Structures are given as C-alpha cells and as structure tokens.
Length: 414
Image 1: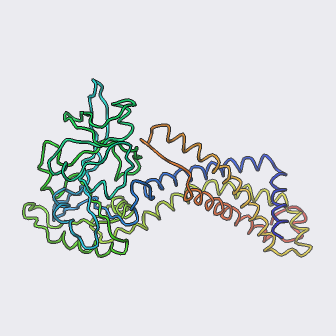
Image 2: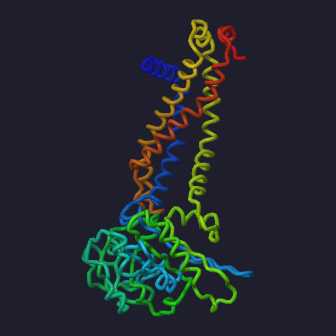
Image 3: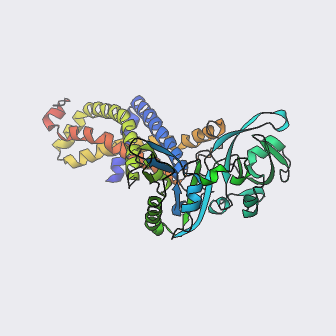
C-alpha cells in the first residue's frame, strides 16, 4: 500500500513540473536557512574541541551587585573567583580567564589587530587545545608574571611566515612577549576558548585586578560529573551571601551562579540576574518560536498551492470516494505527497548546506569559523523537512476529507 502511495505521489509531482519546481525551490531555501542557523547555534552551544569537557563544565560569567538605588552587572572580578570559587565540593579544576579584548601589535612596523585573553595555567587543563608547536605556560610563568604567550596558527603565519615561532618575540599593546606555544585556530563562535593570543593574567602592568569583585574575568569550573552541579551551585551561592560589601555602601546584595553556557546565555538575554533559576528552556523556546515564524510564510504558500492542486483533482477524489475509498486513505495520500515534496526539498537543502557553510567559513565574517554539516544539523534538517511536510499538508487534507463524492465528481469544492 505504501509503495503504491509513493508511486502515485511521485507521478503527481511529475505531472505539474512548474508547480513542483517552484515548491521545491521555496522549501529548499527555507530549510537551507534553518540548517545554516542550526549549524551556527550548534557551534556556539555544542561540544567541540577544545571544550572537550563541555558536559561537566560550569561557567561564572556575570556578577550582579544591587542595592536600593543602584545596580551593576559585569563579568566577574579576578578577586571574587580567586577567593570564593576555589575548593568547591565536586569541582575538579578551576580555571580563570579574561573576556576577549581587542589588542594591537606593531610587529615589523605593521599594525595588526588581534584578540587577547589573559588566563591562568589551569585554563590549559580544563580546555584541551591541540598544540602545533611548544606547550602552554604553567604555574611558574603565571606566578612570576612572565611575559610569555601562546598564539594561534594564523598569528604565527601573520608575524613569522612559514617558519617556527617558538622563542620569538611578539609585541602586543606595547609589551613584548616570548612565544612558547602555537595552537590551532579556535572559532570566534566558541566564546570561552577563543582568542588570537593568550598570556598569563599576571603579565600586565597593573595588578589591581587581583582584588576586584567585578572586572573582566570568567570562571570555568570543571565538575567531577554533571551530577555535582546542584551541590556546586548551592555552595557557590552560599559563599556569595557571605561576601563583605561594606566597601560598596551603595550595594546590598551580590548574585552570581555557576551555570552551563546555555543557562548563562538565557540569564543574560532575559536579564534574569536576580532570578535563582536561569530557565534555559525559555531560550530554547525563543529559538523554536523563531523557527516556526520563519516557517510560517512558506507553509501558508505551500498550503495554498496544495489546496489548488487538490481541487484540480476533485473528480479523481470523487471517483475514489464513490468506490469506497475511506477518508483516512485520501488524507494520508495527500499528506504523503506533501511529505515527499518537502523531503525532496530537504535533500536539496542538505546538498547545498555544505557549500554555503564552506563559503561562510572562507568569507572571514566569523573569524576561524568551522561550520560543518554534522549529524546534529543533518538530523535538524531532516526533522524540519518532515515537520514542514506534515504541517503544510494537514489543512489541505482536511479540506479533501470534507468533499462530498457528488460535488467532487462535478469538479468543484464545497
């Protein structure tokens, strides 16, 4: 039965080639855009190297200080993380890294913009970077404030050509660093590990950052397992309540919570810094709603085209109903036709997606982008195609089921 329905569906699609071509183009374009958007989100929130422990890492992004007449939200200060995030039960390692900031180098008389991060030695253990040359800096370099640096492959090529970079000097913002390691490029979409140059947090001129509650740092807490998350969060929030804010008379409370990247992003987007729960499901709901809204227009167009196609086949429907074809069989036939059409459009979108993603990677719009059609984005495209097909076929099929055999045989819809 299914085979005969499929043969009929393909025959109907071949019968009206222009209609089929227009429908396929609209479906393929819609699904292609959604697949590319899915690939972008997958690169932001998915588990990719060097974040190999993504499933058991919590992040302290922002600190919220509030009082009766004032409030302040910013990244955490190094002092807060150093004093209150260490030795948390269930935490295997704590890494502290600055947020990404723009810096400049005048190597060889050329002005080069780059992105700089200041980190500790644990950063290289929580995150597993593939090293092309050398090794990361360790506690000895951090404790001594040594001016050493790890750079990415692109910076090595930019400043040193095709030769080795180890032991060579790199000037950044007026300070000279000795290169001790080279790593593969990390996409800018990976906000936590991304940079062009990484240096010890202690290598700058100003050391006042060591006592700050708010500043420019993030905390990376590597838990022993995801099951330790609730205990870690509870203990950290408890410690935040014990912080002495007497030096900040305008503030009465300080809130900060270690969370997953998705939860932290949800909290920032919805400005829910004082909410005990970040509710990442809200962010997922927004993504889902945007996808449905984007699907709405092509779905309506396909529904109208499908209704037109159904009404043109009214006499065929009337004959089948007159010979006892059940409504469920007719409804299933038209839904199947729509699903076949959208799956064909999905195949076209999946074939085009690697080319579009490669073009984005090569464009430089997103530095070091590594967008690709992986299993997750493939499943997204396939699922959207089926959903799109069923959604756009349901109403025309319902109209079909309401046709009276006599009316249908006359070739008109009631």
